[in-house]
Length: 116
Image 1: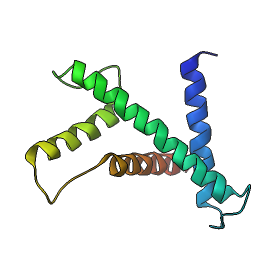
Image 2 (image 1 turned 90 degrees about the vertical axis):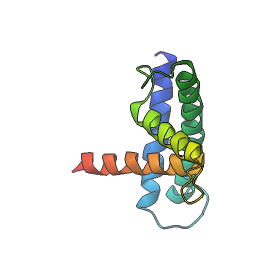
Image 3 (image 1 turned 180 degrees about the vertical axis):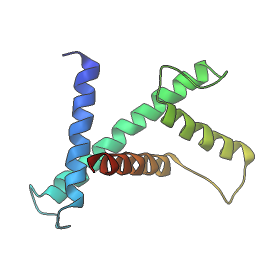
């Protein structure tokens, strides 16, 4: 098994654990689905943060358009964030935390839609 496939399997496992937390009672007890889900949520955010950083490095190297070696969705989200920062509008600002939460909502919505 190569490293990329192992990483993808780990990320999918974290996502599945996080999704189980939505169907559990919100009691923060040892070994509960809720506690495991919140731990997985933190780990997912770390993974997404790494993805954002890698995508920013790819984008910095290739400013001519969308990158073919990265995630199109993440690239679009980071482009929107950058455009909003360049406009310097105080009313609209997206930090990395908000982008991560938005990406997780997209993943959750796609997962639930695909389950039907």
